[in-house]
Image 1 (cartoon, rainbow, N blue to C red):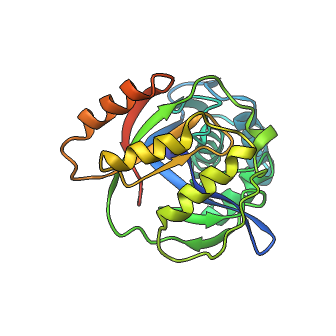
Image 2 (image 1 turned 135 degrees about the horizontal axis):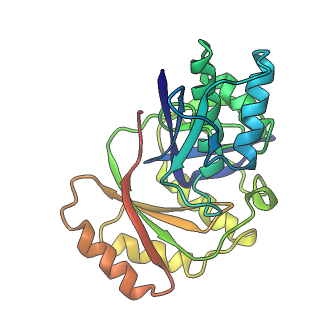
Length: 262
């Protein structure tokens, strides 16, 4: 028996703050993943961090399992401490893979509650872009994305303790629409400058518009920023080079896609 489960990471958030007094974030899932394999072909636990091990213990306790007979192995494409939901992806993939190995399955809502019991979570266990409460894992609303986007992910460097900064954004959502609103994304990113400033963010937004980008987002509790392009933009590589040249304090990490389904 071998079971494999993957969960996407994020490029920060499309927006984060409060709506009607409730903490909320709009997810920015990308096509980079954490993958957990549970198998009887190997033994032991490999690649799991402390949070994923806590989730493993919780799941076994939920299902009354005292001795887990399978091996668990985690691999990831997501760097730590960058605001790319590495912990959430690791925990959700671990929980679901272990549950499936026991003949069970968690719903996205159950995964949300489970991950939020360990730390504030990104909603990567919900398919596509959603608005959710990071403190409880509760789904608030699904957000429609009407076209495909490429995301050039840039890093400001260093790492951030996500627990220290999570849910501290002072941005207040004026509305919460059913359709992705990039104006809201940039407003939220700029509002977060008082909490975790990103060097030259407004200039990056202005320059990105001049090269035909759609918008810029940030990790509200991390070190990355994303520049969004239409997926049929044939000059993306050239434009990424232009950003890197003008903003030499940024490091280009990867070109990926907004994961509207997985």
